[in-house]
View (cartoon, rainbow, N blue to C red):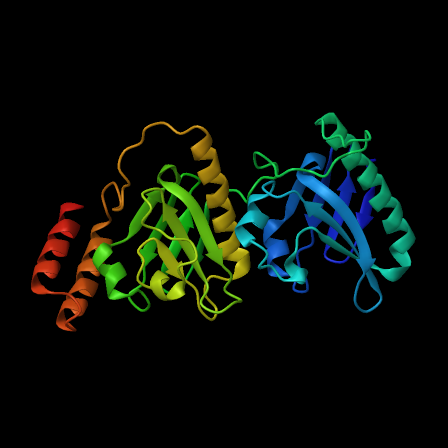
Length: 307
C-alpha cells in the first residue's frame, strides 16, 4: 500500500507489513494519544478491521488488536474510553468510500499475514487469530514517571520505583520505605484507571504476596502499589508506565534465570539532604504516634546507613 489516510487526531500510513499511526499534538487531541506520539502496528498484531458510523457526521475505522499483541491494551484491560482508543481513526462521513477502500485493503493484508503464519481454516480460508505468543507492538519507551496521590512512580526499563509523599502516603508505606522492584521479580502489573473509582497501579511480586484485583483499599497500604486520585496518575502518564512494566515482565519471564531475592530498599548512596528530609518526616510520624519508639530508632539507623 504505502498510502496515507488522515483523520481527526491521527493519520494512518499503510505500509506493506504494518500500519504507522501518527497522533496529532494539540489541546483537542486526547492526552493519551498525544503522549503516544506514533506507533507502528505490524499486520500480525491485528485480528480484524471494522468500519462503523460515528457521532456527528463521522465514520470510524478501527483495527482490532490480537489478544496479547500490545502491552498497552493488555495493561488497559478494556478500561480506555473510546476517545482514548489508539486503534480508532475518526473520519468525516464524506470520507466513508475512501475509508472502506482502505479497510478492504487492510483486511486483505491481514488475511495474507495470517496465511503466512499457517492460520488456515478447514476450507483453506484464513482462520481466526489465536492470542499472540509475544508482544508485537512496542510499549512506550523508558524512562517514564508520573505523580500519584501518595508517591512518585518511575520506570527505567528494568526497575519500577516508588518514592512516597509525606502528604499522601499511609504510615504503612512510610514504615516500609521507598520501593525499588526489578521486573525480574514481578509476575505482573495491575492498572486500574484513575477515571474509575479508586484507581491504582499495583506491582505483583512473584512470591505471591501481591493479589490481582484486591482493590484500592488495600492498595493504599500496599508498598507495591501507588493510588490515584483527582488530578493524580492521569491515564496518559500512568498507563504508559503500566504498559512498559507489563512488556518488561513478560520479557524477563521469557529469559528468566535464577535471580537474587527481591530488593525492596533503594540501592546505592543517598543524597544527604534527602536522608535528612526523610528523617524529619519520620520524626513527625513518631511525634504523631504513628510510629513506635523502636520503629523510629530502627528506621533512622537504616536511613543513616545509606549515607
